[in-house]
Image (cartoon, rainbow over all chains, first blue to last red; front, top):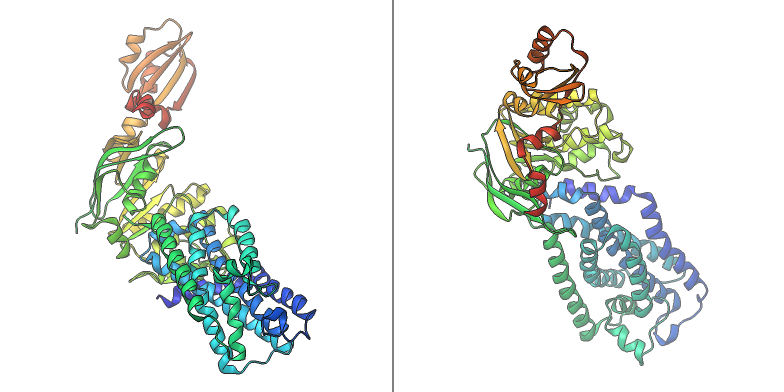
Length: 244
Length: 304
């Protein structure tokens, strides 16, 4: 990939102060509120994880989902501004344009993880470096379906509709995935949760204690979402950008 | 190197009011190094033609080749630079950074500073792209089109947001660029721009090419003026026979002369009829000229 182009894309994101502040600030404030009030809970809702750890990963899931989907919002905005037409008459392959957007989303996701990890440490969360890295790695893998979803909505939705779609979608995925409370191990919420990629993002927290996060079921669900959303995203993207 | 060929191009869009036949079978070839104006009123099909030339729209019929390649290949090779009719600049970069970002996508770009100077925006290189005036934005968009040092430069109504002075220096830059042996195609609805800055004018109306030739020829076709004078009881046949006059009609006490050469006509009119009063000379305007050239083209555009 063209390094200069990517560098300017990242620079643009980091220069957008309001975006940066809100994207990192909301998960942090939520974390401090939710985990702060349950600081002493050692086994939150039968999850086997302490409240500060559980909510740390829960809000990482919330914040990183937003980070990946906001790439979609950027795509929609640039389509509306007509910039994508300008890009299409340059030699930049459409796939490289998308890659830059996905990398930008991942950069924001990493910043979110770092901010919440520091906040977690301040709340008493202690994770060995190796396990932390393993956990972060798994979360990054778990964001693949959200990268695809961002591309999909960026090409399907208008700038006006993408705000509510993202707000509502993320709230629902976070709620059903267990960001705000551990999903019980039986019942409707359990069945629905296990079918969602956001649930498995939150489960990555188990790595911190040396446990397994996903198991076969988790990997299958994540792979299925990745494949389906990636195919849909490619279709929307190609319909929008085919050169003649 | 072969030039640009648009062969049998047509394009129809769907719209809520039914199909819009934006382009209905045009054939244009442009030799490498030519500067060609695509002249026509709004809705003539200029932008649709340009979209097909750039590979942004697929023709329903016909074929585009740019230096012997399909548009997509020419774009991928970095052979085309274009300034589209609409389009905002992306934010959170300054002008210099944005031009550098675009330059990085091309195999053999011009220098960034050189491009900024060429486009007359060397002094605003450090300004953020969302803090520019309309005219400055157009110049930055011009810089984006030029920075790749393209073989073919395409400009779709480039001077729309510019003031008179801005227009003049814009065209001066364009001419300087064309003088490097580049091929330039620009769309405009100003006859004066086509006349002053193109080697050749392709006149479009209702999705068709209605005339194609040197600017002087096109000007003769569409640059007609009218002379209006109070001249009671005069013989219309005698007026029509005056030099430079192509038609005459009576409006009450006044007569209106349609002129191919209004200078010759006014001299002849005044020497033959010194009593002529309340004289007005006016440009017929492109729209009116197009109607004359295309007959009932407007009705056809709706129903065909």
